Picture 1 (cartoon, rainbow, N blue to C red):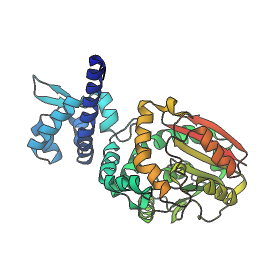
Picture 2 (cartoon, helix red, strand yellow; picture 1 turned 60 degrees about the vertical axis):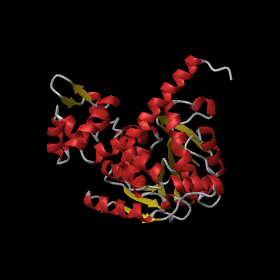
Picture 3 (tube, rainbow, N blue to C red; picture 1 turned 180 degrees about the horizontal axis):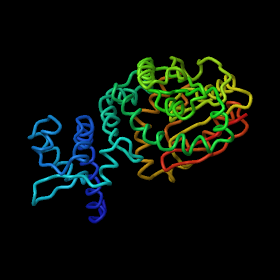
Picture 4 (cartoon, rainbow, N blue to C red; picture 1 turned 135 degrees about the horizontal axis):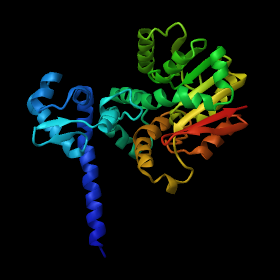
Length: 352
């Protein structure tokens, strides 16, 4: 082989960075779970002993954790004082779960991919799927917290207003179905913003529906929000003014069937909103840092979920607008447009 030493060294450097990130994923989970990031950002600078005392953890473990975080550039270290701190930027990403760029929930998602690796490896050999209802519990919690950030800061403020006439209906009082709702984060955010409307969330995973019901009751929204266990092809008709799919249509085995069912259950002038991971239509245009994350998630989460269901279309998390348009058209929708977008999501509007 004719090896270019400069390219080889650059590639090794890239791999070292990737290995470091992978090794620190569990430390991100620990820092988020034990409140280490949050406490350090709100009350620091701290020595390891001070942070351990403030979080009721062991100093020796905290010392090593802080050292790894400093080496990763996730926290700052001052050699003169021996104290660690977080910059405003680091705080927004790790220390403040209300931030529009909060990433602290990533640890749960990464953990789920490792915990479920034996199932996915077996699926590679058999071609069968791994259903959402067969995954590790941390996947459900991590997904809810990870997507909450985008929904909280964009759904009511930008995405719904981008749809034709939908906000006006919601303000007057509309019927809304949130299909594949998971823990119901998106459902509750809409219900909080539009008290005159009524919302129902559907998901085929009983554990997620149970969590959604409990959280909704605790939040005082049970008078206008309910949750039921149903798949995208079986939820009952309700003459819905708005039917939403938040980052889930591509996970479904039969997305065309799901869209056909939307037509049968929505009002004649209703709207279907698809929120999907951002993707261009060509593979070569998705070879980006964001595409890298989404293709990885698609390999171990989204594609196996679809292949575990009837039809098993396996759109994948990087389906792109053209393929999603084709799904909507085959489902009977004649009007389809990109209402808006973010670097992480496509917001698509489908109407009859």
